[in-house]
Image (cartoon, rainbow over all chains, first blue to last red; front, side):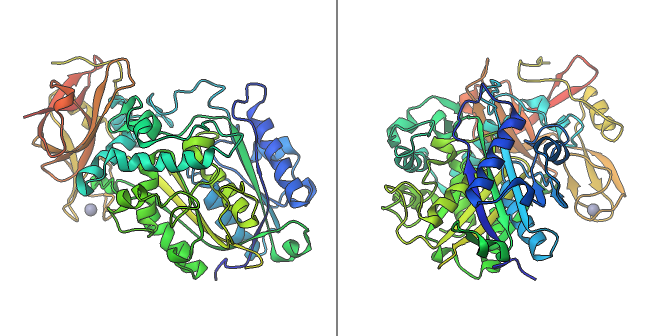
Length: 391
Length: 130
Ligand SMILES: [Zn+2]
């Protein structure tokens, strides 16, 4: 059994806020849910399945269905950090294909900026009872120094340079200049990136994503419902997901779980990386993008630096237009989890609703990829392949 | 013996990993080895993550290793070096590199363990260039 052509994205909504000092986290979840349902032309009472992850407050799914007044028959709160929402699409499509539900709502929201969170530079404990906590937290393990170690090793093994990594931010900024909501709209140069303050070697401030509040939601529906809706739907062709760990101490920081989730998604979709018109690639840091595009097969392992330095990620210029909303690097990174916004821009591209300056001409096939946890320790990868419905 | 830096903290222990932390107080770095498959793993578990045998035993590491990767976090009260060190016994562990010029740290540098007292009956296994 496959999920190919068994479900559609009917509704997509991104919260316009980047600094939600006037809103609660549950409120943001409900606002994006409302936005996505209105986009689809559906109502709250049509929803029969709900998906959320660790950003949902309280008892997650149970707290949120009560708050929103949802009466569902299927619930899935798979937690894979920032990649969760991409995985949820695959899970929702499978549940729809199995007849468990017909209209699945996925929400993400959070307000790390309003809460003044030092997202990347303070040790974060996910719970001191985690089996890894005693062996990491005491050493000042942070998100940024973990990704710094991955970047350092990639440079060591493949000769990747800071200037090459900087091209990823440069490409994102070229796109973000057209996004009125983007946190950073200035077009950046390689020099701007490598001359920005060092956060954790070799990652500069401009190698990091922005810290913003906000959220997003998706509505996934069965083919029968998609057919009845006026809104242009996006067909789900394939999905793959994979955790990647340190395997008992056999550590290799030069690849991500995309090495497994990518091929699984492409195989299910029956397409290849060469067929892709647009790519949304999780971009917590520049190094996240670099390793991911290698692992997804857009270039050879270790050759990502050259690939991005050739301008390949810039829409209208390169072979692989990516993150045309500005991505996490320039636009937003709500709840410190960028998987949802990756899908939202892929949906815009496939509907032809991206900003005209970055819209990929005749965009038929897109990949959206999420990363969760830390490439430096435990991580989750999730990939979906999406197709324009009339393609 | 060095002291804990601002970014460090004493580990929280539990019954499964108590022998590891007890040994640190005596200046010993313990690893778990599986008697069924022979593999050494880190961090220590009761059940081998390679073959799922529960026949695992504590062994003492030599304390010798090489830096697999590192990063100097500059945006901290006092910059410090986080690193993964690959031990002579095989596994790679997260640690800090101390007692050296932080700008001299490099991948493949040979290092040896150096324990830092937490003041709570344990010590953190850190590493210093040989
Ligand atoms: Zn074993």
